[in-house]
Image (tube, rainbow, N blue to C red):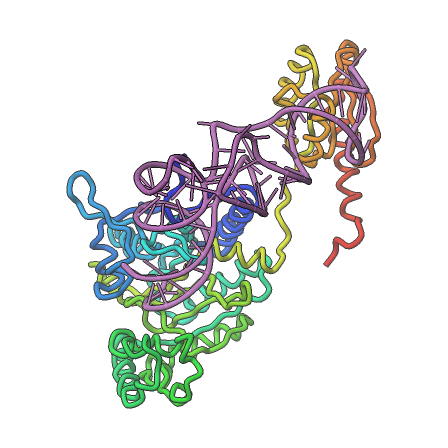
Length: 433
RNA sequence: GCGGAAUUGGUGAAGUGGUUAACACGCCGGAUUGUGGCUCCGGUAUGCAUGGGUUCGAUCCCCAUAUUUCGCCCCA
């Protein structure tokens, strides 16, 4: 048997309906926030990611999906969405658009070459937004609010926003040195991983799972104290805009983001999944990336979210399933009736009814079972004798009432009955919040 | 890149070094010869991930590979 590639998954059925719902809400919200859709290649030249993400990071060194095409060009399956969007922004000279800033959203698959584990596949689907061409703190706040509202509308109640500021690149460097200097004398008392992290990735020590309660860390310098005047002001303004928008947030100095291109505002959206606090989305400001990739100095802020994790969170929180049901199921037994079934199914579908019919020539009993399985609201029973009179039997599958209806009046009849049916549904007890 | 655990029909799974691999659900058919969801009866696997090895004999023991899953590093 041919199996799917390692670390990939087939998304269909119930899970597929959740995925589709996320995409629908994202594109709906993108319209009102006025973010334009962008679709960039799924692979790009490797250099884009190497330069954008930072040559020395583990991500680039061992976790990218690199390959050579037949022309010997080095290519990489995109590990994230921002680099491609920024490349397109520069290549298409969007910085010259009459409408500024440029606001874009995307949704698509990303790839990482690593050992799969819980919540981390090699192929994953992400959506994201980018706001390019402004350094105004209200842009940071807009991105955060946009993301927050998407989650809310999807029905997630426990999402928390955590924000922090790394400052500009010089504050970032000073902070790093300050932290190393502070931790160095005590490093023997930390776990093995943290000891290697000290020089490689000191900021990560702050959210180490083992040492996060280490007494030395309580007094450790935090990024916010190393900010220069300007960075500090930027962060304060972001916070005050968030207050204005009534977005509940929490300042968390341990939010550090791994990629080189972040500066100033960084944030994460956290949800509780299976008892663990997991990030379902994250982002931040990246004022340096456009120029690093060869464009003009451009201030940007963006956000991305893994749909797989969002769906997990929705299921965890019991967000109501998008129900898969149909309006009509057409029954038939003989060939003449089958022709009517085929013909009528087209007519009814064009009239807007979700219609199914028997395909396998099964017994009446099996057709009833099938109709129930599909949660059909009405059953249409085609019987040669009735058809001779141009009539069909329509059975309400909830009340079991059955009526003979003339073919010419069928759609009119269904319109009326469906409406009654829907009204009843609305007044079902226990449905309201 | 490193480590642990797993892999038996459509599904959930039991099980054993020795001719026919439990049980349940599902599915299909029949009783009810074209109105069901209950009941009863019957049917339902190129058979135990793949490739090697040990053995008279392997689904079972050993090795390798693949995939799944859980961790580590790292996190987009």
